[in-house]
Length: 255
Image (cartoon, rainbow, N blue to C red; front, side, top):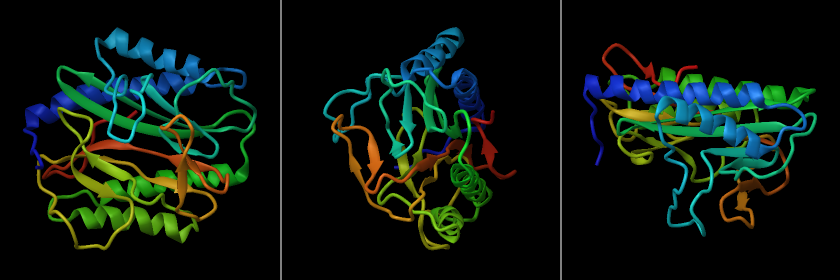
């Protein structure tokens, strides 16, 4: 069931979203060659603590997971698409890093993700990240009252496919509110004019995931969480929490 949020609830979700934005900014600032993924996780934890927020990621255990998630960020490097567990791995020159973070504040959740490079960036990685950001912007632009979920999916997928990139099968965005994952599902590819109509008060996490090789397949790493490309090609992930309003899409996790 899709819950429509009141304007007051959307304002509260904006507050949670700003904590997420601050955490991602702190992580991006801390990321450098030689810095460990665990240190990036600690940078995000410090922001959550200072804001009086908690993490919807920490301890989260969906049906597919062998263990609860042990961190407040997902840190996915190079061929990792999403759900990477922070470890002692130290960033290397040229790494492509995707960070996903959430915050729960006063009972409401924000969810967002960024991708960036560390040290000297490969031109191919820059193009991949820029395309992910363009796909996210296109999805947000389509998130207007009167459109449908399929319009968001088509906008995202069109940008990704035109650039020659793959879209991991079965993964995409979702509703968000009191819980991190709510209805409806928001695919990253689809047919325009199809799916659930968008209404004022819907809040969606819109999150393109792209693979550089153009292949859609992936596999789970031995940790049971991290999803990796099958061919070792690199991946990028971007995300914002967005409210559908009569005045247009409102980005709640803007940085």
